[in-house]
Length: 113
View (cartoon, rainbow, N blue to C red):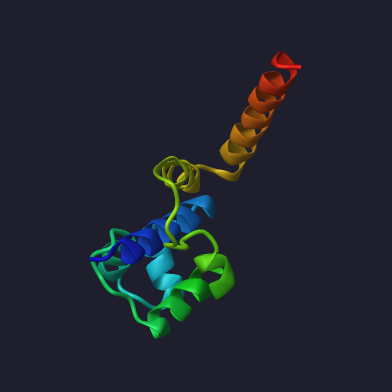
């Protein structure tokens, strides 16, 4: 499958885990088979808009929230790696990483003044 389908699957998995849900629970809430949910998360299925709507309903998120972090636009490799790494982490971990990065940049800035 395409990179976009894989990124979408990763985003669905991230949102599901962030809500503490199993694939079975998401399947039940969205009216989709558990195997299908797993295939979508792994990027093995090219999901329809109708199924995406069901998944969003099951996750209790908007389509906007679902697509927020999967923009496949070209980015420098390092930035893409950072985004991919952070996308898989919890909200707490992302906040910690941001705080750490800001501290490093402030230290770097003060070092050269």
